[in-house]
Length: 336
Image (cartoon, rainbow, N blue to C red; front, side):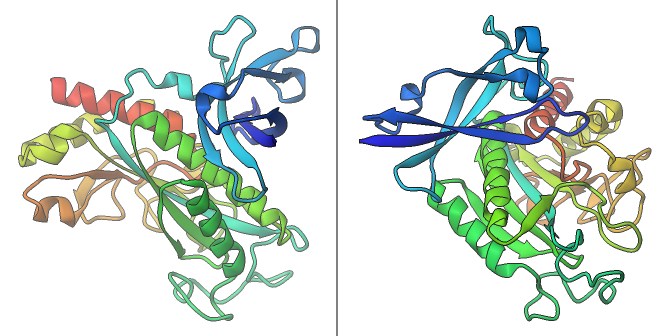
């Protein structure tokens, strides 16, 4: 019996990487990560190498059943140089300390993008739909656009074993969100990237691209973020308000570290409007969706045990790099 293995990786396009993939056919494949061989690709075609030294390696790091093809699997990989060292485009390799102590919940917002009109579904050619207000968590053909595609994407994620915990229509017309939860920074990144891949592939059937830009529609429209909910064992167990204050204060002392990896063109989204704080400012607050970091009410109701939400990451941010920065700053705060 032959199986199809879709090897997925991130290219070297700057400032925002794109997903790439190619299919490998394996005989008598048992479905485990350990059976996935290293592979190579032409890095000169993905902005990752010169033509005179173009071979780069694909190292498998996670595997999922492929819900879109028979006898198939999705293999998330990281890009390595020919000598086995991480390629400079490898965001997963920036995670210095990875274990299941850190939990992440990424709220991935995005716009569907109709390739026939070059606009989000719901936007009339040469104009705009009605103002925001009717679209968030909406129902009905006047307000919800692309639902069949979105539902198919959700089913694909669940069938593949990706831990998507929910979806909803977002504030702007044609804008949607899915939420991924995972234990461990690397695993959270793996699942979020493969969920993005499945969104792109599902959209192909409907003539939709997926626009990950944080502000693809200028004007009085919400941008797209990838809000990062996070906790570690100390946060989940301490029961001490001071623990959360120390962490938030330390994030405020390390703004450049985070903004540097929170997505290109994020200044267009982080303006202080549309449920954001300005990119050049930092604050935190209880239940404040206009803050840089929101302290959820559920954390307080649990006796100061739980999570924080960094609302600054953009929709196009690399979840590997976002998680790596959050782990680093949180550990520094708790060690001080």
